[in-house]
Length: 300
Image 1 (cartoon, rainbow, N blue to C red):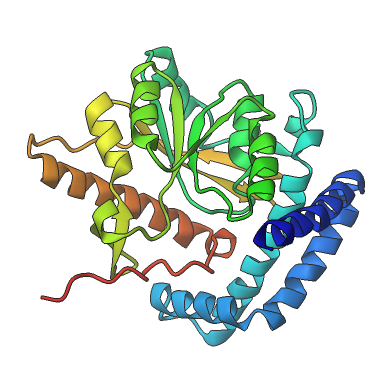
Image 2: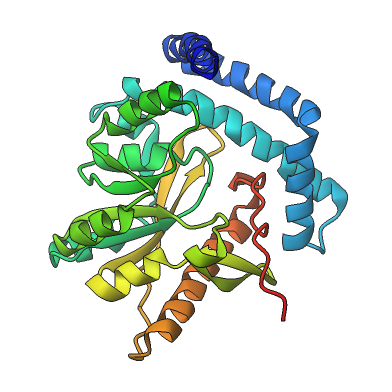
């Protein structure tokens, strides 16, 4: 029965995907934004999570300020749906009309590492239409490997994997990803990691995130310390005209004291701070609907 439910879900989703891909982009965006506005009222569970997270991150804000960002977070998901469905329409000739490099924090901040033959580790989070960033990066000539969590529906997961590969990228399943990423970085290749969501206690270390303990993956610190890869914070920003720009900050210098556990903790905290700074700069473009602090620190 589960198999048939998943297949039926896929058939319905495939119809929606094709429709959003074939329609003019402006029309597709209106449709998914309308659905997102409705979801804001219907999905009380995620709306509550968003508001709780915003209270934690910005206690000085008014409820009206938090509600505005909450609404925008729903709209971002609607826009993400449109952009993912339309990935097959993007190519090297037209990507510049939709996604460009930031004029201040652009590709020069990672090209130096490429020129030196070093691996590049891009640290990012769930900003704006985040699936679009690695896709565009590959079309500009910089393909990468990135870690993904498989969708629960295997048919939808296969479709999304197919789309992610269209521009030349290589998505890697979370299981046994560390070895593949180590090998890629040692070959001077680029990898991308989303580091803004909660992990289980055995998968990370405790960092300070908006003033609260947050269990954060230690994989980026492990990879960087073992390979010497350049660590570049990056994220996608949606412009007012519904185009995007890719922002790549300057390389983060690694802390190396020779004390492994301490180095992992200190560098993971610095990486977390980079993500927090991005969120503070663009709070209305981050995914607030995730329970970032759900993993609780051990009781003393």
